[in-house]
Amino acid sequence: MSLKLYNTLTGKKEPFESIDDVVKIYSCGQTIYEDMHIGNAKTYSAWDVLKRYLEWKGHEVFQIMNITDVGHLTDDADQGEDKIEKSAKEKKLEPMELVTKQVIKFYKEMDLLNMCTANVFPRATGHMVEMIECVKKIIENGYGYEVNGSVYFDVPKFTEEHSYPVLGGRTIDDLQVGAGGRVSSEQIQEKKSPIDFALWIKAPPEHLMRWPSPWGEGYPGWHLECSVMGSKYLGEIFDIHTGGIDHIFPHHPNERAQNIAMHDLEEEPIRYWLHSSHITVEGEKMSKSKGNFYTVEELLKEYEPSVLRTFFAGIHYRSHSDFSFKSLEEAKKKLHRIKNTIRLAEESEGGEKDTLIESIDRMRKDFEEAMDEDLNTPLALSKLISFSGEINNNLDDRKEILEEAVALIKELAGVIGIELEGIETDVKAEPYVDLLIEIRQKLRAKKGYELADTIRERLENLDVIVEDTDSGARWYIK
RNA sequence: GCUGGGGUGACAGAGCGGCCAAUGUGACCGCCUGCAGAGCGGUUUCCCGGGGGUUCGAAUCCCUCCCCCAGCUCCA
Image (cartoon, helix red, strand yellow):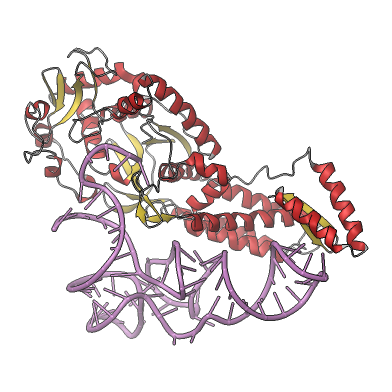
C-alpha cells in the first residue's frame, strides 16, 4: 500500500515516492512575533503527523521547520513596517529580545503539544551569510538586479526560460501588487517590472534589524530565507514542502522560482507541495479584532495537550473546519473513550478467548488504508474508537491479546499525534486516596451512602474519579 | 470579481460507482448500579442542496442552478 498525497503543484492526489532513502521535508513555520494560536498549531500538527506516519511506514525522515525571526512587512509589496520591530517597539523590547522570548515559548508549546519533532528548527537570522550569498548567485545567474541598495528578482526574465506554475490556479499577473497606482512608493517604482519581488531590501535609517551586505545595510526579502535554509539542510532538490493555504500565493511560487534561479535548475526543485487549510472560530474567520483569537497557551490551561491533538486529528488537514469549545469537548470525549478502554483492558485479568486477534489485524490495515489516502486522520481516529468498543466487548480475551490490543491503540494514536502513554495515577497521592476509598467502602457496606457519596464528590472535585464495580472500587485521575 | 474547497441523519464528520450510508456526540429506552460513573444493547423512520443526464446500478461520474466557506496586503 502506498501513501497518496494531494500535491498543490499538480492539483492531484499522487502516490508518494521519495527521491532517495531519506524523505526530506521543509515545513513553513512561524514568524515569531506573537504567540502560537490554535490555527498555527492545527497546521503544525498536520506536518507532525506527516512525519510520524512516514516513519511508521518505514521511511527515514529529515524534517526542518523554519523560524522566522526577521520580520516580514506589515504592508503589501515589500512595503510597510517590519512586524517584529513593530511588536518589539510596542512591548519596549529589543527586537532580538522579543524573538528570544517567543522562541523559548514556541519550543515549550510545541513540546507540550507533542510536535517538537522536526530535526532542525533553523532561524533566519542565523543564515544571513547564506542569504547574501544566495542573492549574489541569483544576480550572477541573471535573475536579479540591484537598484539603490535593494535587490529584486527579475520575474519576466525568469519566465522567459522557466515555467512559473503559480500554485492553486493563480496567474502571474496576480503578482502585480500595487501596480494599479494604489501604492506609489519609491521602492515600487524602482522595480523594472511591477511583478518583480524583493530579495534584499535597503534598510531605512530607523530600521533596527539590519545587516551589512554588498549592497549596503539592509535585510532579506520575505521568500529568501525559505529558499536558503531549504537548500542548506535538504539540498537543491527535495521531496516535500508544507505550509498554510495562505502560502499558496505568492510565497511558495516565489520561493520555488528563487530555488530554480539560485541553482540554475532544469528540474523541479521540490516534488510535493502540501497545504493545510485554515480553521475558523465559531464560524468566523479568526482575527484579533473579533476577539476570537485563541492561543495555545490559554487553551492548555483548560485542556490537556492530547485533547487538542485529538481535536486536530479529527479534522482533515485540507478541510476547512471550525474550532469551538463544543468541538473541543467532543474531542475530549473521544479521548476519554480511548483512555477508558486502555484502563479497562489493563485492569482486566483476561480470560480464555482470543476474539480480538482478527480485530487487531484489521485495525492495522484499516489505519494504514485511511492514512494512505492523503492522511485521512478523521477516518483513522474513528477506526481507533470503534476498535476501543471491540476491546470493551472482549475484555475476557486472553491477557496477552489484550496487551497487544492496547499496545496497538497506543502505537496508532501516537502516529496521529495523540500521546496515550503515561496516564498513571499520581504516585504520591496514591496511599491517601486508597485510604479514603477503603473507608468509603466500609461506609457503603453499612449503607452509609450519604457520606460515601460526599467522599466521591469531594474527590471528584480534586479530579479523582471513583468508580464502583463488582470487584470493588477503583479510581483514576481525570 | 478571480481561484480553490464544500453542501451527507439533531449536531460534528467519514464514505467518492454496487456490500440495507462509517464513527462520535446529543436525546430517549433497557441491562448493570443503593445512587452515580464507566461499560454493554437498542431507538433517533423513508436520507446524501435543487433539477437534468450517463449507467443494469450514483451520495459517489457529467451538465446546470442555488447556497456556504476560504484565499486573493502580511498571516498557519
